[in-house]
Amino acid sequence: MNTFIHPTAIIDSKAELDQGVKIGPYCIIGPNTKIGKKTKISALATIEEWTEIGEECTISQGVIIGTLPQDTGFEKKRSFVKIGDRNLIREYTTIHRGSKEGSTTYIGNDNFFMAYSHIAHNCLIEDGVIIANAGTLGRLCY
Image (cartoon, rainbow, N blue to C red):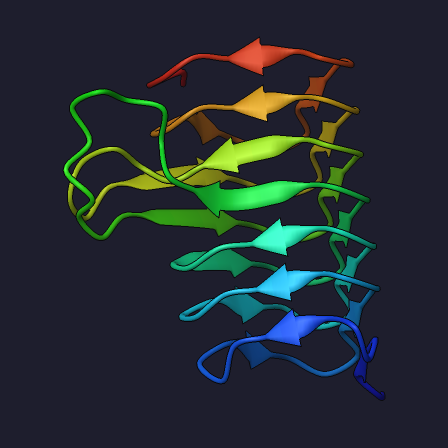
C-alpha cells in the first residue's frame, strides 16, 4: 500500500503519515500531525499542528483542520484536534483546536461534514453525525 505525496505539497518533517495516505497538490501538513492509513487529502487542504486524523478519511479541497480557535481568551497553549475513522469532510470545512491548554476538539467515526461546515473549538461530535452545507457548531457543542 503506497503513500502518495504530490510534489507541490509541503509536509513537515515531524508529521506522521501511515500507509496508503494520499496528499494532493498544494496541501500543507504541519508538525506534530498524524494521518491514518488510507486517508486522502485533496488539493489545497491544510492540516495544522497537534492534529490527528484516523483511517480512511476523505478530506476535500480547501479544508483547514487544527487551526487556532476563534476565542479572544486563547493563550496560544498546546491544544488538539482528534478525528476518528471514515469521516468525509467536504470542501472548505474548518475545524479548530481546543481553546484551553491540553483541551481537544473531538470528532468520532463515520461522520459527514458537507461543504463550508465549521466545527469550533472544544466541540465533541460522536459517531454518524451529518452536518449540512455551511452548518456551524459553536464552541463547546456536545
